Length: 457
Image (tube, rainbow, N blue to C red):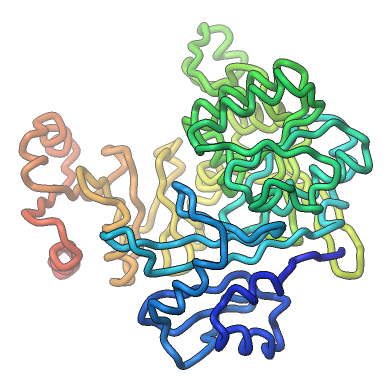
């Protein structure tokens, strides 16, 4: 892989005392971003971890020096450097004065998508999933270049934040022959997507960070016009996308269907089931697990249908190494709820919340098969932050499970004022003999105090 990062153009816009420190740093090629906050020491973040660059603290003059040498900040508080892929984001105080900068290093990495070259040649629409900072934008930039230069496609890039082709009217060379359309404001992205198809006859549309319902609708419209789509969105895996209402239409949408008695018996399911609503806008999904390991769903229709019916995902794992070796293997991944049912008697169950691994259980499918040891709290939280509960219980070292079904709980905890108003909940708890604990104030201290009383009793 060949990397073009124009790092020198970013360094020369920093204060002089930082330029010297970065030039001398032995690990500067692994630099991810530089953080400059008023009154704090400057910090560099590398792939190996963060490091301070100097004992000197950042002053107003240091921030002013950098901001005067870059382009103007947009409404999203982002700026760039001409003909580079670097991004500078600012933090402002209440008077809208800049008191912090995040200088992100942009890199064009040539050859990074060799592991999925066959998928590009299939001419199917591709959606890339990954958490922030994992390299989704770098990947679609290289996909755009390969499609335009190697496969001779007419490619249009919808560059909303100028991250794909850089902060300049002249696009960065990292996109090859692909053309770039800039977006004046983030909320206009869906309009520019449709405009690109209607005005410029593209064979491929590349768009970064699909996030709103209007952008999802635009993506579906483009797919129905026969144009290949390449896009990214936030999420760790296909399951996240299925459970995300604004984005689920990218994979066809989900709807409840009521089956007849005979059909339900034939399928061996309940009468009300979830099914895919329509054909997915993206036919292939790539999950970026980390920089060298990607999970591929080559048939999104089948993956979604299997997930909804049998509770497992069928994926293909592709790994690549510095030795230029690529490993491809297929694997079947169970969903969390199915794994729970099959491993309910094991103390290594991933749903038992520990310091390293905690999961919120939303759907316990079979009460008989789910038998927890008596020393584990099964809690039904009512009008109470689940994150707050988890934080307290993890610190106390308690084994617990959070459930959304009162019948499965051996304990109900909530805000006292709201509990008193829910007569149905109170009656159901009384019938099932489930104790209810009410909090007059919601705080870490009050929750901890309550659980200490529960343990002592």
